[in-house]
Structures are given as C-alpha cells and as structure tokens.
Amino acid sequence: MSEEEPRLDFIRQIVADDLKSRRHAGVVTRFPPEPNGYLHIGHAKAICLNFGIVQEYGGRCHLRFDDTNPAKEEEEYIRAIQEDVRWLGFDWGEHLYHASDYFEELYSYAEALIEAGKAYVDEQPPEILRDERGSLTEPGTDSPLRSRPCEESLDLFRRMRTGEFSDGAMVLRAKIDMSSPNLNLRDPVIYRILRQTHPKTGDAWCIYPMYDFAHGQSDAIEEITHSLCTLEFENHRPLYDWLVKNLPVPSEPRQIEFSRLNLSYTVTSKRKLLQLVQEGHVAGWDDPRMPTISGLRRRGVPPEAIRELCKQVGVTKYEGVTDIQVFDGIIRDQLNSDAPRRMSVLRPLKVVITNYPEGQAEEIDAPNHPGNEGMGTRKLPFARVVWIDHEDFMEDPPKKYFRLAPGAEVRLRYAYNITCQGVVKNAAGEVVELHCTYDPNSFGGGGNKVKGRIHWVADAGAIDAQVNLYDHLFCEVDPSAGEGWLDNLNPDSLKVMHSKLELSLADLAHGDRVQFERSGYFTPDPSSTTQAPIFNRIVALRDGWAKIQAKQN
RNA sequence: UACCCGAUGGUGUAAUCGGUAGCACAGCUGGUUUUGGUCCAGUCGGUCGGGGUUCAAGUCCCUGUCGGGUAGCCA
Image (cartoon, rainbow, N blue to C red; front, top):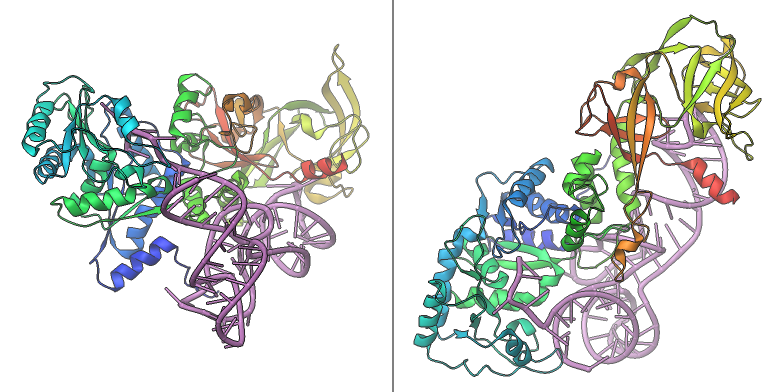
C-alpha cells in the first residue's frame, strides 16, 4: 500500500499556506450554530471541517453559540447541540462560548463606531428603510438622519439600551455606502430593540446586535484565524472585513466560504425541519427519518459513517447534490465489517416440517460473521416449526426466483434443505402456512445443490419484536422545490413489522448494531426493552433481486 | 436585468500554480460465495460554448451560455 498524501481542499490549502508563511502561529476555528433548532447532516460537514482542520494542523476549535436573536433561540437546543457534536466525536475542551458572552464588548464597539462617525441611530420605520435601500439594480438613497451629530446618535443609542424606546422604534446603522452594489453595505442595521428573554442573559438586554455585528467581532475576540462559513455569507464578507477594520478588535480573522452539503431526497432547512416536527409529520427532532444528527443516531447510523460522508464529499465552492445512496453505501460499508450477523424474520410465514419428528430439537452453530471467524459462533435452535419471510415464498414465481415455491427446494441457512409440499390458505385466500419436508442428509451443505438460501427462525425460542423499516422521508429528489413540498412526503417512509427474532437479539442495547441476514442493518430503538423489543432499520442491504426484477419488467 | 460566486464522466471530487485528465461511488459484464450480501476482475464514460496567448491550456486572457446567492429590525 502506497501511503499517498491526500489532496488538500482549497480551505486546507489556505490554512497550510498561512501556517507556512507564519501568518499565524496556529489555527483557531469555530463551529457557530444558532441554537434555534437541532443539528442536521449539513452541520456535520461544518463540524468535521472546523474540528478536522485543527486536529490535522494543531490548534483549537471553539463551539460558539450564535445567540443574538432571543426570539428564536432556546436552551433545549443549546443542550442538544452539544450532545450531538460530542457524539459525532469532537471535543471543544474549554472553549465553549456564546456570542452573548460578548454583548457588553459589542455594545462598546457600537459606541466606538458612533463616536468615529461611522454609525447612526435611525428612527425611520422598516418600510422606509427598505425603500431607501434601493433595489438589486438601483442604488439606495441616504437616510435624512444619516448626517445627524454623533452626540445625538450616541445619546439615542444609550437610551435604546436603557429601554426608553419600544421594540422597533429605532435601529443603529453602520454608515457605509448607500450606493454600494453590495446591498449589505448600504448602511446595514447593526442593533435593534427587542424585548425578549434571552436564554443566557435573561432580561439584561433589550437591544441585540445583528448577526453581522456579532459574528466577525466574536471571531476577533476569540482570535479565530479562519472563520469558515457557507456560501450564502459570501456577500457579507465585505461587511465582515469593514467591521474588523473599523473596530478596535484584538485580531483579524478571515472569513472563507464553502458550499453546504446537499443530499437528494432530503431537506436540510431548519425552518422546514421545524415545521415537520411542529406539524407532527415526524415523531420529533430525533425521528429516525429525520436528517438531524439525533435522528441519525436514533436510527443507528454510526458517527464514523457521517464523518466518512463528509470526507468523501469534500470541500469546494460548487453547489452540488450528493446522492443519498452514497451515504447509504458508506453506512453499509462500515457495518458490513463491524456488525455481527443474526437471523430475523420480518414478515413471518409459518413452516411445518412434516417429516421432522415432533418433540425433536437440535442446536446449530452459526457463525457470527462469514468473513471473520474471530467473531465466533452462536447456537440456533432448530425444530419442526420454523418461520420464514413471506418474501421468500411465491406461489407462482417468476423466472430466476430461487426461493421457495410449491415443489421447490431451498436451503435454510446453516441448517437443512426443505422442499415445499403444501400450501395452507385462510378464508381470504392468503397463504398462511407451508408444509415442507426436509432432507436429513443436507445438513452442513449436503444434499441437492440449490440456488436459494433463505433465513429462518425456529418457533421454539423465537422472540416477538416490533421492527421499524425506515425509508427516505420524501419521494422527490429535491423535496424543497416548489411550495407544496409537504405533498411529496413519502407515505411509506415507515413500515412497522411484527417480526420473529432469534433469541440472542433479546438483550441488545441501543447502539449495538447487527445485520439481519439478507435484510439489512438494525439496532434497538432507545425505547426498546427486553419485554417489548423494538428494532430500527439503519439501512437495507443492497438488493440484487430487486434489480433483476426491475429489469424483467 | 446590478453585484458576487460557481461550472471536470450519471454523482462527489483530483490534477502540487501551463506539461500523459486520475480516484471513489453508481452502472454494465463475468468470477467467488451456505446472505440475490460481501469480495475480486474487467468495462462504459468527462474538462459548458466560441475566440486568443503558447511548442503545450481543465489550468492564463477575452467573450458568451447556464446555475446559485443577495433588496430581514433572521442567521
């Protein structure tokens, strides 16, 4: 194996160059979520990038809550975000911060800006501000209050802080350039009056800085060297730089933008995710169908797989869409090598082996992993009555169907060959039981060569369990497109099965991941108990038979 | 119709600053296999268009096309 140096993405290239040129002694990054929702797979990309870089180059990564809008932010999210980042495998050490830690400092920066004649209080209503801002194609016009004396603005701003004015009565604006082609530079609002109890500062403040006035300065205060964010902030960079240059901040961070992670069949808009939760389309933020970190965790996706996805997707400025199947493939890869094999019959069909003596029973050694003897074996009971999956029987099978059918012979994995001799139906004409004979000489690979090998669970010792089969939440590749995005919710995104499991699955815990042979990878739901086991499907196995069928049609 | 950004096989990316367009996944074909899984081998397929500079252009210049972002007292 040649140990080839991995190519650097453009951000790592910049970091490496800066280190080489000694522009910085070390790297300091930060992950700055707003605590207004749960973290999702898109955030994982930013987390892996920011924490990954400092692991590789030496340095530190801060976790900083961007909590400048108490109208939307909640303590619950602050808690959940920390749990999710840790679970993903990253550690911010001592460096847990909040933008609100800097409210006092930010306030004094604002006063300094006013004193320098570079900010002013504007009490015009929002509609007027909007009109004066101009349009995408036309320059804005100056506010009549733009040239008011600094002292007047300073006085008003201080009184804004003391709560003398009502919400929205006036704002503080940076004085930059109303005719700039970049709308963010047209005297942006940097402070607004907002009477909301803040999760951290309570009612200490009734004015709050806007994102633009908080983020760069917070970076500078924390001596962040590389402030990495997504592409939609590209147009904000001139303002970011302007503020850093015009304020007495202790360092000069640099903002670099990269494209966010987009996955097919997935929404990663916090607003939409919140709506799914609030309107009950899913069972909560951690519903296993959600692309949230907590949802993926509950479904059983290992954190390594999420990190691997982020690694494979890379870091660029190109806004592509990654096929969700790539993620599924990564999860399978991970679990294929790690997960012990078990047998589980999702949709049980009873099989009576008519020539197997009643009262007889035996125990079969089954390997826990076909490719890894080191994982050992386990005992499987075998007797006259077994369960097989409904999918593994067809009364009138198509060509190339290797499984069970009237007169057909298949191998019960690790056990015997059986031949279907009779079909029992209920009043509705549905197949409810099969009568088969077994070949006593076929154990361990003997008997007729058969193409079909199916999984099974003996009725003796089987446990009943609920198994949740999850599929993509949406039917459309791009669910966000259009207004009626909720219309393409996948009605089959959850199928609840009542299944028969082999006994060894009884005392698995959430996070213990196993493969149900020929089916998929599963883990117990956190709510699962020994008395009432519930398993979640993490991801299905690749289904070659489905592919063949699709071609036949 | 202002400004900013982007464009390499189906998808995600690489090409160390102008020097053989490579990797992974998916697809297809075959092999192995007590999972129609895994694994192995082979195969298909790409520099958005037009000019220019150069011995040589994915890379530099000009121009066009297409896509995305931006008019919150959201982040």
